Each structure stands twice: as structure tokens, then as C-alpha cells.
Image 1 (cartoon, rainbow over the protein chains, first blue to last red):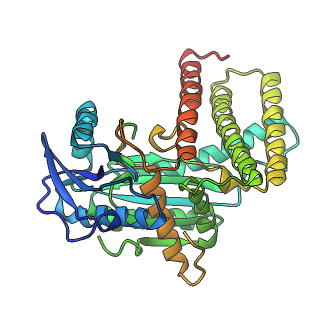
Image 2: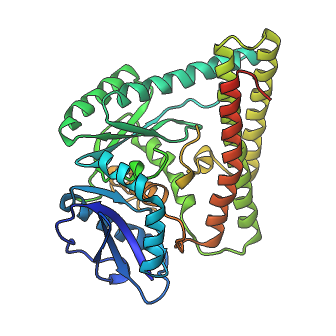
Length: 209
Length: 116
Length: 68
């Protein structure tokens, strides 16, 4: 069984870290892509530790590749042929995604507030108006951050989660991005912000971003 | 890249709230199959309520768009608003019944991406 | 993750953000033997089907300016 950690371009070397269940990392070439994999005799047990190992491998790869697409946790294939078949189907989008993330990193912004469904409203219209204001406020936060990024992605918002955003940036823009978040923080004292990163570009690796 | 656990670049307000929000991602984590009927039922309720919540958000967003475009009559606005309001209240009741919180219904959709 | 109250809050947040990314984001390829418990996969599959159609309806309604 072959387990996939990431797809890369310009991978200089395999990092000196272990893969799942202590298996060594291996590098395979397919077309223009460098694949980082490990081989296993039997199905690997999913576990919390395995998730962390996967993350560690991806993290270690970042400085070693010109462009890197992290794989989601759990992609295992019966053999190389199966993996290559799957890659063949996606080759076009993979190329695109790799070019988009080349030299860039992901920043995450999570905004949490006390807002949930509007409560002190008298009727249907007031409810929708209040919801509209909530949605507009969240959109505004996202738009102002997206304007400072090369690409952005947004997660579901619900309950107290006002915004969950991912922003693809050049590492050099991180200080300015931090400042921008700081400004939003001071403009919205009732909200809690968490800016995290830099992350490998997990949120920009898929087809939909 | 530094230590994978050293990634908070900045935070303000109550980080506890943020951490609590993120708690929901644990629910997406593969667990051992649990045959305890109560947990199965709760898991099912979580799934169903998550679906309803997502659909509600989709429909609400659509209604908000149309309201902004002026494509809804006063009566329609009132009726839709009331419906969403009642649905939201009913959801709150169901969440309490099943011991679920907002963060439990924030199931990410993985490769499907983000519809909202 | 075990509840680790001893771990600084910031590390907790990072850990959770990390798990969120690794489990929910990243490249997905077809034909894989996903390392997940079967019921989690079922959730994804059935949600995908249901919400794909709901999303399409939503999009169509917006495009046409009239709704169902």
C-alpha cells in the first residue's frame, strides 16, 4: 500500500523525518510531479498520532520544494499504478494549483463572536434584516483580508463563528497582513480573532478553491 | 516553517472561545466504531442537524440576496423571516435535546469545499 | 486529541487548526483507500450528493432571478 503525503515541484531532497508507523519517506516521479510517499505492508491505522506525523512530514517538505500541495490525510493506494491513475485524472488542476501556491504560504483567520441567530427581534422582517447585517459584517471582514492575499478560501460560518478564512500570501506580506488583522481587531472589540500560520497551503490544494 | 505547534501569529479577545469553536473538528476525526446506541443516536442527530443547519444557511442566503435585489414583497419577506426564525428556534430546542452545541454542527465538508 | 489543560491555549488552537487542515483540506484524489472509519466516509458521500444538488438549485435560482 502506498500512502501519499504531498505533490511537489522542484523537490530538492526528501526530509529527514519518518512517515506513518515509522516507515521511511520515499520520493517518486510522475510526469512533472514529485510525489512524496511511504510504503506499507498493510493498511495503516488512522490515529491521532498518524495525523500529527502526516502534518510533520508536510511541514518538513515546505522549505525543500519550489511548490507543494499537501495531500489530505488518508490517501492510500493499492499500488503505484493506482496512484498514477488518480494523478492522471487530475493532472491539469494539479498543475494549476501548484503554480498558484508556488513560493506562497497560507494564513488562517478565525473570528468568533457572541452573535448567533438574532434573538431580540419582533417579526420576520426584523429577523432577516438582522441576519443581513450579520452576513454583511462577516463578508466585509473577509473581503478586506482577501484584498491583501493572492487567493482566499472561506469556511462555513455558524453559531458563534463569524468567519473562518484562509489566505494565500507571499511570505513577505505577512507583517502587513498581521497589521491588517490588528486593525480589524481594534475596529471590532466585541469579536475574538485568531491569526495562525504560516501553514502549508492545505486550503488551496483542492479543485474548488 | 517552525515548530508545527507554534503558529499563532496574533490573537485578540477570548482565545478560549476560538479554541471552543475549533473543538468541533474533533468530531470529524475517525473514531473506532462505537456500538453504544445512545452515541449512535447522537451521532445521527448531529449529522441530521448539521444538514438542516447547512440547508437553512443556504436558503437564508438566497432569501437575503433576493431581499436585497428587491425581488420580494413585504409579505414574502415577513413570511420567510418568520419561517427562518421559527426554524432557528426549533433547531435550538433540538440541539438542547441531543446535547449538541453550535460547534458540533460545524462539520466541514472536506473535498466538497465550501458551499456557503 | 486528549484534553490537555496543561497545554498553553495558543498551542491548543494551533493543534486544532492543524488537525482541521490535515483532515479536511489538502489534495484529494479518487480511487484511494481512504484511511478513515467507514461511517465518516458515508457522511462525506451522502452530504456531497445532497448538498451538490442544493448548491446547484441555489445557483440556478440566483441566476434566473426567480426561485422554487
